[in-house]
Length: 190
Image (cartoon, rainbow, N blue to C red; front, side, top):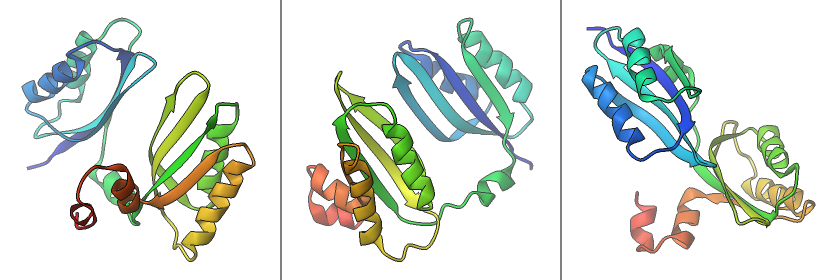
């Protein structure tokens, strides 16, 4: 039996219960959410997810989700062919990149430019801003062979230091071991 897969993106003002209502809509159409990322940015709910169904429900899914959202919300329901997922390179171990300093224009571009220039894919990125100081936190993976991690780490620190930021790039396990309250052995063995 064929599986119909859709990539869905929603951006709308936040409200309690929105994730539940979207998930219920998918279940009502006999769907399964196989991958998702949801966050709130400046009071706006942002959700992107992949849903799988046993029949073509694209139009019904679009209509049902539209009914949940207020005017002006952004909704996209796109067919998501299975080969797209297979073609996306997922190789490489995950690293955590952090950069902290006084917020100023161009920092996000500097980080993104460094990553792209070194064959590093940004998989997840968020910021914590307190009005003057900002911390960028990103999960990244190397898409090209890494020959000298220490050189890349030093270059990242230097590139951000030139802009007044402290920065680090470390393996996910190291970041977790120094940032989580848990036995180190259990973190490393995951």
